[in-house]
Image (tube, helix red, strand yellow):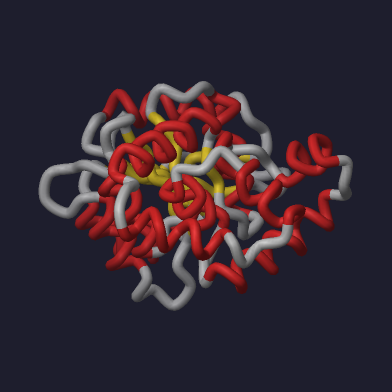
Length: 230
C-alpha cells in the first residue's frame, strides 16, 4: 500500500489509526488486521517519522502505530516531536525484542504503549483500544521482553533504588504492580486478585503517586529493575 490516506465508508464510530513504518509490508499487515475490526480504521500510512506532524495535522488520528527504528527520524524522535501538537495522538511503538533501550526512551518521550511486530492481531488491536482510552498498553509478549531486558541490566544502584521504591507499597499495591509484568489488563488483574476493575484502576493511580511513575509501563519497568519476584 502506498503512503497516503485511506478511503473509509462512513458509519459507526471508529478509532482512527495512522501507521508510520519504513516497511510497506507492515502497512499491508496492519491494514488487513484493522479491516477485520469494525471499531478500528486505518486513516493513513507514512514511511518516515519526519512526516509525523503533517500527517497528524491532516489525518487527525486517535492512535499512531509507529516503528521504533527507522532511517532518519525514528519512532522515538517522532513521538518527541509530536508532543508539540495542540492535541497529540496516543502512540504505540512497534518494536522487535531487542529494542529495550529505545522503548524506554519512547516511554519517557510520551509513548503510551508498545507491541512486538510478531504479536498477534488481538494484542495489536487491544493495544490500540487501550491507549485510546487513556491507558498504557503492553502486549503480554512485549511486557516480558521489556522485563527481561531491564532485569539483564538491573543491578547495583538502580536495582537498589527500585527495591526501596517498592518498599513504599502496601501488599495489595505490590500484588497489582507485579501483575503488570505479564501485560495483564485491569480486568485480568481484578479477576486474579478477586477485586473490581475500578479498584485496580484506583490502586494503580495510588501506585503512580507513590513511585513518581507517569503510567503503568513505568511501574512495570521499576518492578522489573528491582529483580524481585514479589
